[in-house]
Length: 231
Image (cartoon, rainbow, N blue to C red):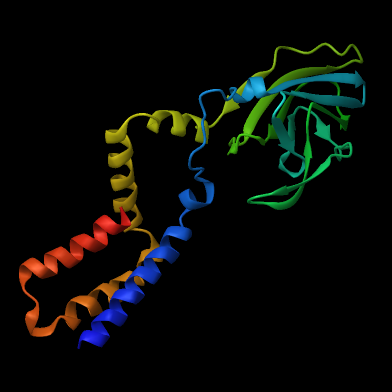
């Protein structure tokens, strides 16, 4: 009985490790990173755009030192005009921790896009970048109104940034109670995800393996070890 119990415990902890690795948070979490000096996304990646002529627009990002943008994370859309295939300049090869071999831009990037339309239209640009400090931003959406008359005049751009990893990291920094409560809450929520289902028969096997030695208090302790372990 003791050997079987040890095997069940080993299976329990092995599966727990797999579950931790399969969570989205594990794929994005950066431990030990200092976010105090990080720039806001619209300052790290300053956006503007203009119409070069009646059929071409240029999207420009001025990128702060220590930051970079991913080439394959750009997305373009327009309301009131039809966009052609964007013409990207050659970027820098970069081995990314999460995305593997990618192409990035530093300092600045200018992207020309053919466009069909007349008069004014709204341009939407989605971009994503990271800081050398080890923190990546969530995608940033930038919007601007352009006129296809060759004047190059553009209204002031508008930015929309979803809740970023930086904001979340700053929320948790220096507040142990929030950190502890946050991990407990995320752990409890994790117990309702599909990848936790394999834990149910394993936990049942551990409890059943106790046999006659099992009592209500011990069963509660084993169950709590599972829930708190996930938290």
